[in-house]
Image 1 (tube, rainbow, N blue to C red):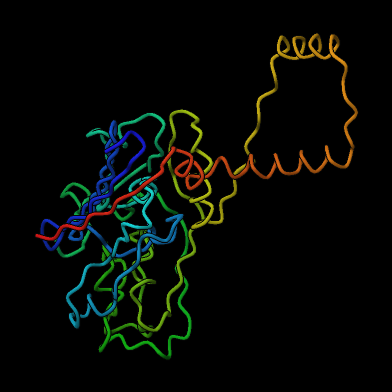
Image 2: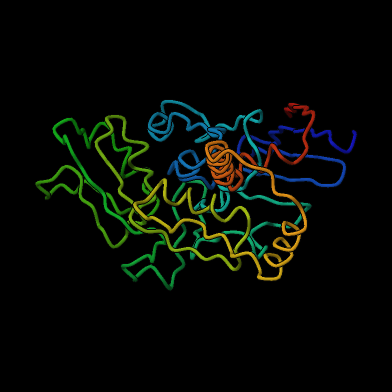
Length: 302
């Protein structure tokens, strides 16, 4: 393997685990997906910048009609940005750089809270929290139900079977087909993804997260959050050039003849530079600028 050559290995060591390993001569990135921890919320699918994650037939899997994973990864599309791991609510996706979890790195975005889930895709609530009504979700929002005449809460049951906190139910004494216990809802969106009739909509308003320091890829994190919520963030601010640099530049130009520049050509150049500046802050652009000249993909099945 040459310095600029990169290989990607795809492996399924067991029915519940998928791993993607990116290797260069100096570095290694590992993306691990554990299907038995996934709650089928679809957040990773929504934010993936290259559409490398495809959701499986969630409704049919939950109903027992099919045996399939909740997600499928395309190793040819994955650029190992780690966005899916950053915003996974249940740690079903983990990401390591040279054997160090990126969740331990200061320049990595972190949700204010994550949950553990069991093999039945239900979030594990510690005994001391079972009597607490509010699950303190890092996501705040609202569930919208519509066209409920199409709902079959007896024959379907996908929404309240997949709900990781049992926030949805269909009580016999209720006039409504589906009842939401809102304090238990963490607005993950699993019910909306799984509903075969698409009768549920999740509207996420805010996501509580923290970032220790600003990094070149910070804007990509914020764009992903903007994509799945109504939140907006101020545009990236470019720091002013230090005064000493301006003075040096002035002296250089004072000692040299400044050629005439066509104003229209100068305007076009500035417009192109501004366009390139925005693109350089995206994960996809940074990935392709790593100097990659060749990529091998190897599939392994055990």
